[in-house]
Image 1 (cartoon, each protein chain N blue to C red):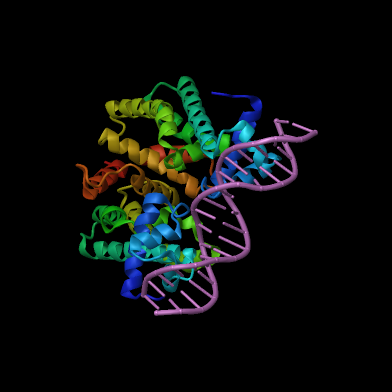
Image 2: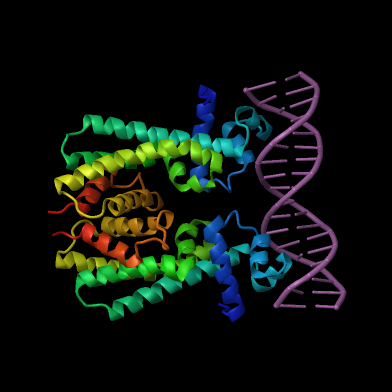
Length: 187
Length: 187
DNA sequence: GTCTATAGGCTGATAGAC
DNA sequence: GTCTATCAGCCTATAGAC
């Protein structure tokens, strides 16, 4: 896809508005104003509003994937460390990198079927990382249960942080990852 | 508040549409059609669209509160049973009772400030039940960790089921509650 | 309590000048 | 690449008849 620096910058601004207001309530006029242009000019960069959403979600998922891979490559090899690295990476793309991954998770249903099909593979690649790490943890016996349900519960707990966690407060994403891993590990 | 049977019925239908389409994308015309009336007639029952949302969220939260209380009154007294009863009741209001509780959780931010203030107490009452049960579980030593974070993680795992769980499939809400409780309990 | 008709505003998107 | 100007459609909500 097109990835001019200008388009990347606009995508970043769009992500911010989509998180604040939600995709449906964000108008092309709001987007244009945030970008310092008029609404008509927006359609020089994106074919329509849907394409902006797809661009944001693509970036958010791509980013989550890269950061998670990097985290797995630099952390210790034991299953607990790898689980912790994934949880921390997930939280960091949600709150530090910022916005685009949140949109990917919360506005996925607003994608039209074509975009959903296209971006599905990227999303699957990210989820596959989780599956791997959770399988390792199950095999090592540090967590127990149905692998499907355990995955969904862990990701649910992480994703829902968007609704309550204040990244400017006392707790760091690392603290949250610690607590989550501790909560699910058998002792 | 007004609670005529007619209004209750309309609220139930609105909840269904809000879950399917999201509040923002649901138009008063769609609501009216689902109710078998014309859009103008809707405003005889509700002052505006916001009031419909408030009615749905009030019912969803009220319902979750009643069902959770009932579950706690009939389950065994040990902390594990009580935790399980809460998880199961939460899932049942999400998937069996249906829709209104989902709207309360996922469209809360769309409430205007006045409604949010008014319904905040109801929501707090429901969360207070969770706090009690989680405190009991922590005190009994069957789970461990920061009480705030543990609460948020558990509710996050439960709430996110809305995004992936198929209630017509193999697993029952009871199965899910079993797995979740097993996942977080120390052994 | 429901209807018809419509106001008044905002929406996403286009065309063509610069 | 951005602007101005604008279209056609849809939105919430209201007014008044039945």
